[in-house]
Structure formats: structure tokens, C-alpha cells
Image (cartoon, rainbow, N blue to C red; front, side, top):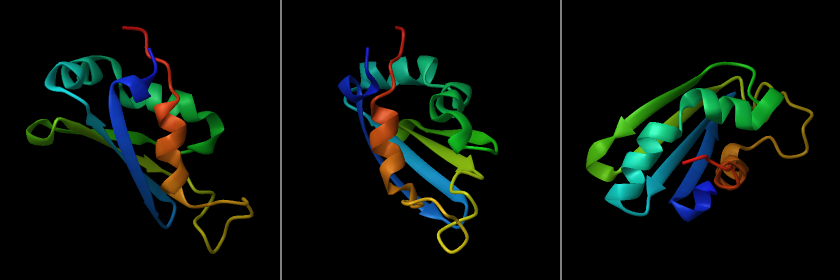
Length: 101
């Protein structure tokens, strides 16, 4: 099942850190996300784009997960040679992730 079928997402950046918020479509989907969408799976999904750690925070009141991805933007906008260094496109890429549920 693709993550986009369970949730919406938004992302942004600050320096070399990308922040991805994943908001479940329902309480049932939130419970599935808490069980199956781990920080390790998010890091693996992005491969070598994220060189540092990924930390997951749970926001039960919002039925949302927040992933903070360190060393994810090749040094940040002023240092990177990537065409698009901003973290805004990370949420779209994460929503393509497939989860086995």
C-alpha cells in the first residue's frame, strides 16, 4: 500500500535539516502509520540523500508523525551543488513510499 493512500504530508528545510510532517487520513490510518512508518524505513526510502539520522516524533492529538532528517540537504541551500536543495519536495517523495501492512 502506498503512503499517499493513508496520509498527506508537508515538508520544509532549515540549513541541512529536512522536516517532514505526515498527517493520517483517519485514526485507523494513524495507528497503521505508528506501527509501520518507522524512522529507519524513512531513512532507507531516501537512500543516500539522508546522510545523518532520522528522528520520529508522534503527535497523537493531531494523528500525525513528524520526521526530522539530519544531513539531508547536502550542506544546505548556500553550500550544495544539488539542483533542488530545498526540503519541500521530500514530502512528495515520501508519499510514494510503499508499506507492507
